[in-house]
Image 1: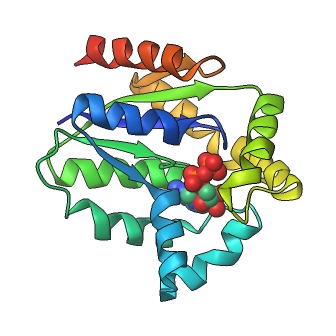
Image 2: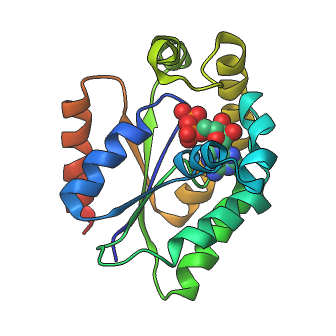
Length: 190
Ligand code: ADP
């Protein structure tokens, strides 16, 4: 199975690239952010619980993330693997992913880290806020999300470097150029 994590700060282009990767390599696109937004839109219990964390730019506690992920992952059919978008975002989630995959006799091929400077992340999200309709795309929450990324999520990089699964990608450029780099990187590891 071709299991890949796409990693990076908020607004780094994970979602955009994931859609392209999923299509080209026949993978399931599993975005924890999209799953959470779907729960909120449906007004489910879980959606209500996670709403304030997201609106404030905080991470949703690991137990809710793992709950939503395990609900989803067993329903994936006829795919060559999974592109994990926005997960793992903490060391505990990275450890949980190892467990999820090993239970299924699978492993991770790669973590692709989209590297984008903070100022660019901020600009992109402010631009996106005009049309995204997302409660967390506002100047105050955007700053908080970038801070949370550096504090809680960036340490995940070291975890994957130690496993030899880390691959940096320059995430500042055209969507096509970044996708071309990602594609050749995945092909080289297949
Ligand atoms: P972005 O990366 O642009 O911030 P996401 O859709 O990946 O967008 O995430 C939006 C929000 O959803 C995050 O700020 C966080 O509150 C919550 N979230 C998404 N994935 C996770 C996760 N794996 N762990 C904790 N919180 C998450």
